[in-house]
Length: 104
Image: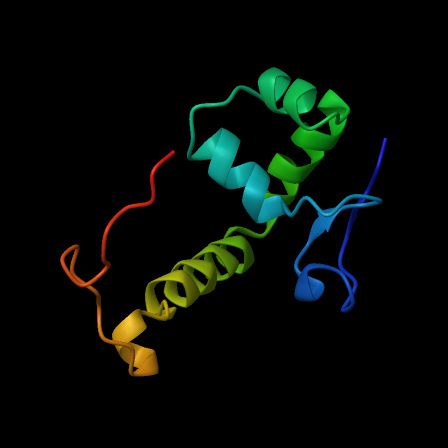
């Protein structure tokens, strides 16, 4: 069974299951806060059931750390600005401007 590790070069140093890029925060989101059982997550992500339980135990030992990771991820997603055509100075085309459709 894998340990919970934190290395700067993987997942930005967030705690994760050793040998995998699956963070404790992801296990918490899917199992503790989500709808997956530990068994379902183990099968879906090819993990040992003990790895899932170890990640959950880590969360219960370090709840503030993991909730901070989750909060920062949510904020990053909310603050992400998708690039739209008007951001690039491109005028949207209407169907009439597109011209005739080619015959198939």
